[in-house]
Image (cartoon, rainbow, N blue to C red; front, side, top):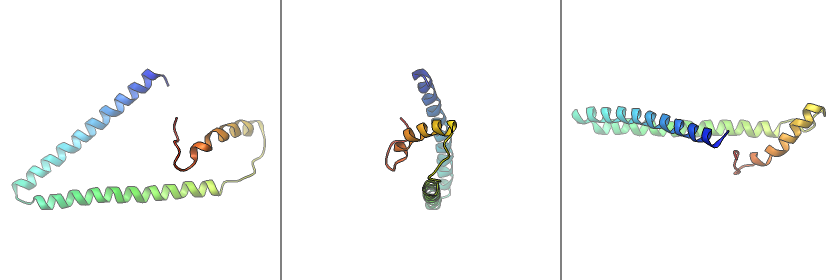
Length: 109
């Protein structure tokens, strides 16, 4: 992808995230004002805290599940592959990508 294309994609992603966060912030602020009006801000604080904790807990659980599946798929892969023209081409890609799949390394250049 050209430099111009990467910049365009970055700007579009940034605008999307900005509008998404603004929509969420408007919703939170409106609910906060309503709960403040009826003097139950501690209830809304509890609701927000619970939502945020659930978001991170489920995200962590899913990361563990996906990471475990990736680890198992890597460990249980067949070690001997039949050699053909297609396999030789794939082997070159595999040799390039294997260092990038090491834990703690960058996956994208």
